[in-house]
Amino acid sequence: MLSEQLKELFLKNKDPLTDILGQEDAKRGVKSALLMNRHIIIVGAPGIGKTTLAKNIAKLLPDIDVVEGCSYHCTPNEPICPSCKQDKKHKVVKLQGIKRFIRIQGSPDLTVEDLLGDIDPIKALKFGPLSLEAFTPGKIFKANNGILFFDELNRCPEKLQNALLQVLEERKATIGSYDVDFDVNLIFISTMNPEDTSTEKLSDVLLDRFDVIYMDYPESIDTEKQIVTTKGDKLANVSDEMLTLIVYFVRLLRQDEKLEKKPSVRASIGLYERAQSNALLKGRKNVQFEDVKDVVISVLSHRIRLKPSVRYLQSVEDYIKEQFHKNMEATKWQNHLEQETSDYR
Image (tube, rainbow, N blue to C red):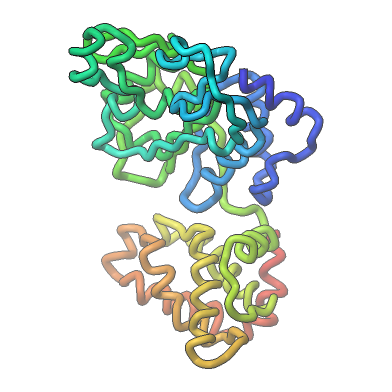
């Protein structure tokens, strides 16, 4: 089992999940769940690293020998697809863990066939309607010996949720009148955004098959600054003082009770990158205060949402202008930052 492959690494290495900065509670929860081969839902707002965390786990999986060209990632000793079962002379290649990371994007139009597979009518005529040769595998089979990452699980329709129940519990998939054994070795990791309103309600019986790991925004301003400089592109010089201003303002907005939807870390990265491009367009190599001011509406207006009691009285653009003027322009923000940022550490 894949959990056994991760066990030694998790127990010996203090922090193998180095692609994620901070989030110690979430990382500890993930390691604990995977050690017992549990299915996981990572719950959190957009832009906090849920996908990065799942990919980091895939990178930790050891290289394995697989049959060359097999979409099921069959190993020579444990073939699961009809082709590999019939042909005993396999050409073997090494495959990295990240190459066995299969992603499904949750969507209302996602079908059971997309996930599990379907019967090819032409192959059914040739090999027989109940033959495995007539079965075209879906993504869940392609995640064999790897990770099936289901992004935004709560966007999938009810019919697909019901199909997942049988797969997670019985390791068997029923497609129409066909029963297909689900003899696949995988880690199932999914995500949910609790603030997203355009979603399907997950049934209690489906949720009962998972352990839930919660992730939040970066714990401190220093951690978020490190994420911004690591993930963001650098084209011009951004002083530490200016970077602190950018991240501080975004974190300040997250504390505002007027907001229904809060800005993610992508907002901090967006301000960081766009301020640099503004400086370059003005012929400078160093970012100044005006470069940040000029892009706050462009970067933030669609990433936040005012509560109903506020949005009918004030536009989101006016709100951002007001907050930026109030907290950045109308004060000596250099001195203000030194005092206030300690609240976020």
